[in-house]
Image (cartoon, rainbow, N blue to C red):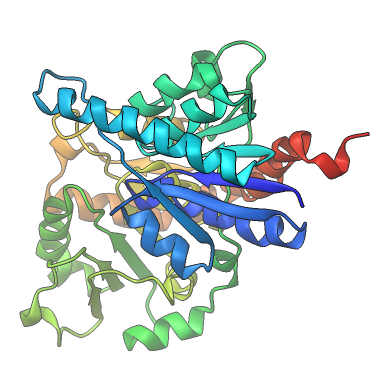
Length: 358
């Protein structure tokens, strides 16, 4: 039986594209194994999907001086050893890595055993983990065409991001009913994001008295950020986090406010949802979200508001302008084949499918 090992973790964005590949991998008869961290978010998500999961030690390599770099280096070395033992047992035909620090030991161990590796990079500029892993990969898939300039010649392929099939199956009426909305107003959905959620949450809530005159608002505000005092506010529905039913909320949304994480914005693009991006500032990140947002703005897919310029008034003005021009954004997104990410990545995996070798 043909075998594939998937790896990647640390954030949901390093896992969900892997999960998007599962239906086709299963349909094609691949034996699928996942190697992740001992306590990362990927463990829960993968096991819920019914995929065999193995964990290894991992460590984070920081760009700044820290004593933890020393201890984590030993964890990485141990992780390579443990990943090597697992790969010898599994004997996969190919390893597909979505990135994150847990993926580094798996990629290094695979290279040592001459197992071909495919890496997927979500952001325009590769993160540190993928920078370390890229020299050991046969193929590097990218979400953005701009990323190819950072990839060794002959290795890079612009595939887009694999998008979960179920996101395209949302029901607008179910989404409206889940929020208690009657559908007479356009719907604004805001995703706070796990980082910097408080700033976005506060700004949106300050704008509610005005926005609710013309919009119903769905607010995914993050764990611990629900405000009970607003629970009975007409036209406003808040959730900490939504897994089941998220596709219905997306279907109900006319416009979206979000950070500019690659996985999320790829989903907005595939669903052709006009969106206002407020990327994390360089004070809170390495600046990858700023580049992601700039690329989408340049291509006409999104409107952008810099965090440093964000005020209640500015957010509201941008939302209203986005809604007024929504058809322009929908038209621009409709011409982009982002929903082909699964098929494009599978084309690369097929290069190592033993059943297709003649």
